[in-house]
Image (tube, rainbow, N blue to C red; front, side, top):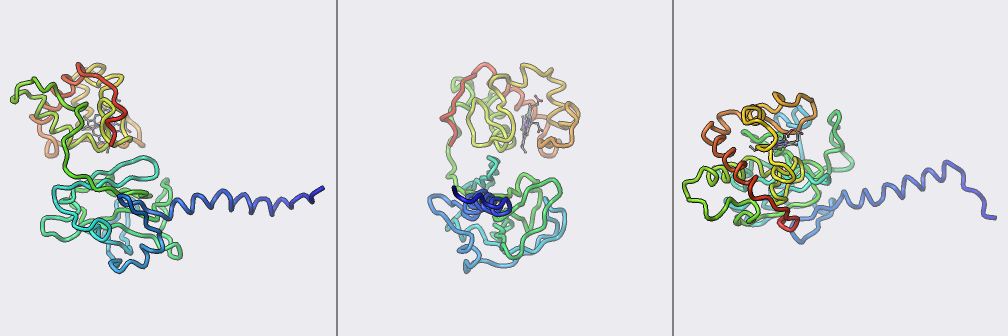
Length: 274
Ligand code: HEC
C-alpha cells in the first residue's frame, strides 16, 4: 500500500496545482494575434517609469513601469479604437485619440507589474496586475477607463455598428432616433449591449428581454440616467450618472427616442458580438 502523504505535503501540492494555471494565464498578454510573456514586457526597450498623481483605483499617487501603447500596437492612430479586455469580461473601448491626447503625447500607459515589486492592493478589489491601464493625464477619464487585470488588447478599425443596433433604415434622416443612435454608441455601448450586439458584458442588455422604456415611466428613466442612485440606491452600482454637460437635454431626448424605437425592433444576435 502506498504510504499516505503527510497532510502538509498534500496541501503544498494542491496549492501548486491550483496556482500554476492561474500564474501561467495571468502572465501572458494577448495583443491582436501575438502573445507576450510578462518577462518579455518587463525587459521591453520602450518600458519606462511613469508618475500617476492620483490613481483612480488605488486612490494614491503611484509610480509604474509602463509601456506606451504604440510599443504594442505600432502605428496606432486617431480614429482607431482600442479594446482592453479584463479577465472578468469587462471591456474598456477607448479611442486612440483619447489615449494619445491632442498634442500626440501619451496620456495612458500599460503598467506592467514586476512580481518582485508587487503593487499595493485596493480595498475590496482583486490584484490589479500584472497589466493595468494607467493615466498620467486622466482628464475626464472615469474609473471605467482604468481597466486592470487586462488579458487582451485589440485594435478596432472604425467600422459600421452592427445592424442589430441600427434604427429602421427606412426612418427619415431627421428622425430623432438617428441622433439618439449616435448618443447611444458614444455613451452607453461601453457597458451595455442592445439586441445582444456590442462587446461589453458589464451592464444588462437594453432591449432584450425588456427595453427600459417599456418598464420605467419616462420621468424615472430620465432621472436614472442623470443619477442612477435616484432609482436604486446601493453602493456597488457600476453605472454613473450623466450630467447635462456630458449629455445635453436634447441628446437625452434623442436617446429616449432611439430606445423607444428599438423596443419595436427586438432580436437576439449573439453573433453580433465581435
Ligand atoms: C460604466 C458602465 C456603464 C455605462 C457607460 C452605462 N451603463 Fe447603464 N448600467 C450599467 C450597469 C453595470 C448597470 C446595472 C446596475 C449597476 O450596476 O449600476 C446598468 C443599468 C442600466 C439600466 C437598468 C436600470 C434598471 O434597473 O432597470 C439602464 C436603463 C441603463 N443602464 C441605461 C444606460 C444608458 C441609456 C446608458 C448611456 C447613456 C448607460 N446605461 C451607460 C453600466 C453602465
